[in-house]
Length: 397
Ligand code: PMP
Image (tube, rainbow, N blue to C red; front, side, top):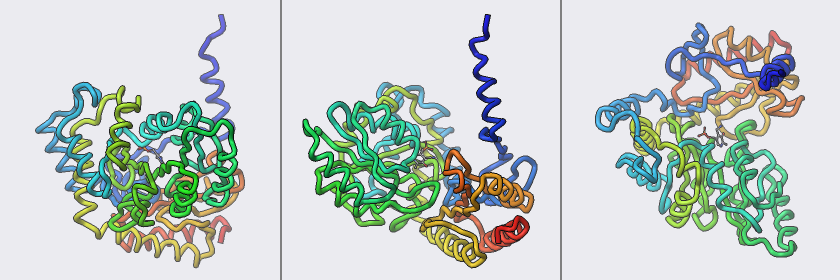
């Protein structure tokens, strides 16, 4: 009899032969500026821990205390017996931070997009999505019964054309949902959300922004892309985010109207049917909101380092694309070059992973660097020197 699982080893073997498999690096301790990875002491230069909060003493103390007061598990899904006072407090605190009527916390950003999007648009509706949106949005759209259309990346004029065509559709769409990432994670560019919201508004469409990489980064106090553009909740209806990046913990969330939140938690299957966050996670998220509100220096330092690093890379002659955020891609072209550069940087003490095909086009391989506020100015100097040395050795400069 043929082994029904033989495809597993075969397909994995294909990935390995094409060098498309993930080789996991093991972090032996916290995600701190200097960390131990596979036995090497290296500067962390590619985590999403933008503000260094994943190792912040206030978050760690809050998590420890919550274990003592509330235990290590919530015991249930949120709608049955898994909503603790901590969950309710986090949602109150987040809504206040976001200047929104209400917020809702999911288990992850992925669970938010894949659970909520299919509920916001279904049969007889249309979802219009930026061509470079994150995979969790793509999966959310695929789970929906709505029709789909894609507009050119960050192009509000193209969105307007798609919406004009949609207007002529018969029968008329019941609802139209426009979805965009706020900051695009591979290139670090910011969606023109003001123009997108204006175009969507002209056509009576709902607007959903995934601000995973804008929170803690953009806008006054790191409040995110909606604050950055000074938009209102009538213009951007769903502001989605995650606690797994600048907030330093884990968990997804949405902010918007009370009606949005009431609808979302009664309808999202990922929220209704999956165990809720354990107490230490929730307490650490609350502490992260506190830190963002009370310690503005983290966001300021993130931008100081970012401006300095971007300028140094450009002055050296590296191509850094169109990023205007702490995500700075160092474009090198061929996948093999990006892998060599990453390996050499690692040997020189800087950990920055290559992003290669199929995550980006074949000739667009890059090292994706992500700045971190917990670095010192000397750390940034160290990283710049390593990039210069590796770049020269590999003939990139
Ligand atoms: N959206 C975007 C734009 C992301 O980059 C990510 C994380 N890679 C997610 C959603 C998913 O968030 P989480 O890690 O909380 O599942």
